[in-house]
Length: 385
Image (cartoon, rainbow, N blue to C red; front, side, top):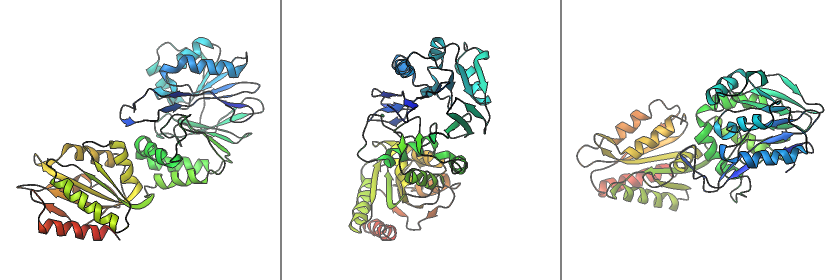
């Protein structure tokens, strides 16, 4: 596949993977993207996952047309992009590995046998000339590893963005929901903690004339890039995408679930967009993504061993470690003799910035009654506005 006349796509599709990074469900597979720039000197942009060495090197060899690469640019040392550096160097031992100082610290941690005399250390702002084309390097630490860097090719106006602007799904998967849905789940799960660093990256990128974004996962982005840039700006500022309510719950004997279903029904009748997640059964990544996508969140759980139900505690940990903020939050708690879930939840959320906590707490003592049903209705009326 040609990105431009001189830039080719040589990535691979992983349709056998079930969990990305051991936790994110990827029913539509995963793309490990790699690119090659053909010029007087040839630069390969990143490697691919460990199981795809033969396929990747075959695609590279076909693109090279009998030539040999001069450089392998390592933008990110995470194994899904770096596992085949050794295989590359075995086939092309005269090639130079290009990375920053932190790149090579990680390189030596992953691989013990790569020679030190085939390395070129670059800094942010440095340029690598290939002939007609060149690469300008931007350091992007903690987007989402400390060694991450990105590269801009000014002749064709191509931005090689490492993990930024990536999404779940294989390269050959035509997502009917468009880019934003799985890109949001990917961003929140993988990069979401590092909003400040993404803002710094966007500031650097705003000085570039970009026609095409080539990420390490998902589709190549071209044409009108404003949607992608705008969403990344919004996500990294922790602003909600949509008005609506995410409802996350756990329920032992069904009484908390009954309250959740009642709340959901009343909100939907009022025309409010909602999504409901049973944290014991539904995909955790989807539930986390929904909490960031909507401007309102309801947490419903039981008091459990003088704490809260484990799946709810885990869910809140996923939110707080990603800097959850700037949302309206309400709690539905259930406890037969000492309901303290709301107090525990608010303590876990204490460090989150910009949260507006509803005073309409629904407290269920064992099962719903007239009083707690009325409290559900009051909460529905509040969150319908």
